[in-house]
Image 1 (tube, helix red, strand yellow):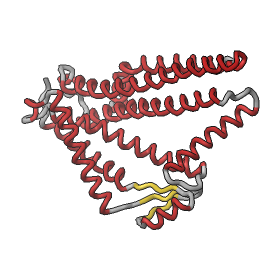
Image 2 (image 1 turned 180 degrees about the vertical axis):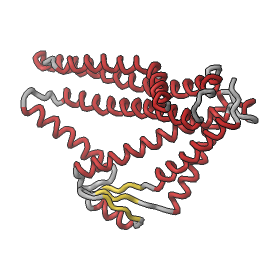
Image 3 (image 1 turned 30 degrees about the horizontal axis):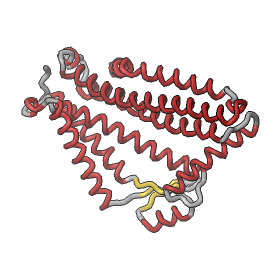
Image 4 (image 1 turned 135 degrees about the vertical axis):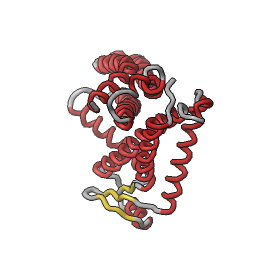
Length: 300
């Protein structure tokens, strides 16, 4: 039964955003076709015209991805409220499953689409930057093209890592550090969706139902967001746990001197306390939301 709930939740959210991904695919194909055009045969004017056309396509791709993020947020919010607390909620809440299962299915689906949309936006921005840089360098076909693109990407990561404080960046260290930040972002996306669900649920509970309008939901969301982030921030200041990333190992430490030494050696260091506390609080928030659905919710 849980599998069917998850499947239906995925379909419900997908129906609102799939057109955006189709549009992104169309723009992406156009950008690939433009890469096949030899703009240099028209001289400087051709190179300039190619840059202008490619810039428009890159902006269109990023704008489409940004719209996709907004539509995803709206879809996750409206689908949850519609299926749980509107007229459809009378049917949903009578299903022979626990409220926690209903909540988990919608939470998993909503978080997946939020993460996917945000990842698509980041990838579109990154690839569009490389796309325009490639044209500006007038890279020729053949082995030189692949070598130049490799050097271009490596240099870009080198600049980003230097800005982050890594003095002698290693691709392995950068990849591992980037993976940790990606996991961090994924955890926070899960928590973000859960906070939205909690705010919507709270707005349908007495005595909050009278203030359960759109403004009330926003206030509830920012209220729980402030509480979680404040508590996580306090714990982070009191207990600082770092993960030092070298080329062949991950090491836990609570010493800031070791962290500073790791940065100076070209290694990475990542503070895990905040995201760990937020993850633990999300479990508490999930249980509280499931309890409210069971005991306190009023369906329209």
